Image (tube, rainbow, N blue to C red):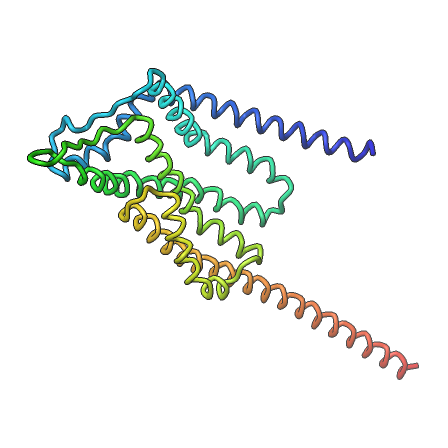
Amino acid sequence: MEASAAPLMSHLIELRTRLMWSVAAFFVAFILCYAFSAQIFNLLVVPFQWAVKWQNLPEDQVRFIYTAPQEFFFTRIKIAAFGGMILAFPIIASQIYRFIAPGLYSNERQAFLPYLIATPVLFLLGSCLVYFMVIPMAMWFFLSMEQTGGEGMASIQHLPKVSEYLSLIMTLIFAFGLVFQLPVAITLLARAGLVTTEGLADKRKYAIVFAFVAAAILTPPDPLTQIGLAVPTILLYEISIISARYVERQKREAQAAADGDDSGDGEETAASESDDEQDLDSDSKSS
């Protein structure tokens, strides 16, 4: 019991160290993002400005309100937390990798490292898709429902709240960033032998239905945003099948190389045994 307690304590101490570094990185990134939270929010407003221009509306249409005294303060807190998590993710991921790396073989570490690099890259690609395409299209769709008013018509103007706009764009960034991890997740499952390319191809029709259902749940109830999430999800599923097929081919080649080495060793063993038998025969004849 004492011998087994020592490694456990060392693992717990190592885990505590990695958690402290991760929390410290998030805290520093949180303070930094909060100091520039107003500038970050203005940067997130740019897609809304593009939508206003597409609708040929005046520039003063880009207005936001908050109906509670503390609303914008908590909005800045959310911006700082979300931005801090994104900025600190490389450090957090590296700490996770350093914690689990000693328990992996060298080939497993080499196989795991590309996925660790691909995760933030794919998340960034999903965020860029939201920023440059999905949000402008969604806001253009919502702004098209305004009414200028007139004879027998009420004047209906879009006045978004800062908290609601931030929640919308954060939800979309998280949804698209999560969906863009599909190739990484499926490739890891294929490497572990839990899924096959044949099974993924057979379930393609179910994946298409699931993509549209997930888009309807994760995005606002407008067709442009839902299609903007469903179509990339289907494309990523096809990319995942290609990646899984590449992993399976690598596994087959490695297995074939291992079988070749085993057969070569067997032939050498048989050759040495035959040589020994010939030597014994020659010795018996000479005697």
